[in-house]
Amino acid sequence: EAQVTQNPRYLITVTGKKLTVTCSQNMNHEYMSWYRQDPGLGLRQIYYSMNVEVTDKGDVPEGYKVSRKEKRNFPLILESPSPNQTSLYFCASRRGAYNEQFFGPGTRLTVL
Amino acid sequence: GNSVTQMEGPVTLSEEAFLTINCTYTATGYPSLFWYVQYPGEGLQLLLKATKADDKGSNKGFEATYRKETTSFHLEKGSVQVSDSAVYFCALSDHYTGANSKLTFGKGITLSVRP
Image (tube, rainbow over all chains, first blue to last red; front, top):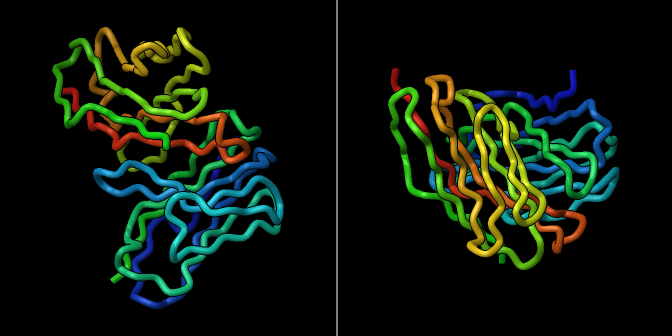
């Protein structure tokens, strides 16, 4: 089954404790993105990647890092999480620049 | 920059009622337009899309027409069901921005359909 998976689905942590949210897709897509969803703001792009070892900032990159060492994986790293990063995070992938994006199920992160 | 404006919600309808959710956009280039749906506890799923002016996207009884003259992409369904209860997002992908062509989302609107 074609899908985007994320782990963990739920995470509660404390300020400053480094964490990683994993994202993996099995569709051989070149393009992957991370979004955060906040009430009243819709979804905003954090980072994106056009292929292995090619990443760039989206609209709200502050406080986040990503890496793309393999085509299927695109982890999101929070080196020192803060409460304003409490949000619902989605990973997405697509084949070409203008094709449909497929979304993962989301990771609900709470930073205390 | 690009932006998407959706009508304010939430929206509550009775089963079999007619649905319209308004969406207007601003884009620097030639966007593709999308409606995504998010069911409770799930990720976003593409509902329908249109890639050029006057295209009509349709799926599961939902329709939306790409209106360049009014920069709109309103979502309609003739008879809603309880199972349509979800959050609906209008979005655009602007080809002018090149390789990223990220999705710019509206704020989303919650639809509740009562039996």
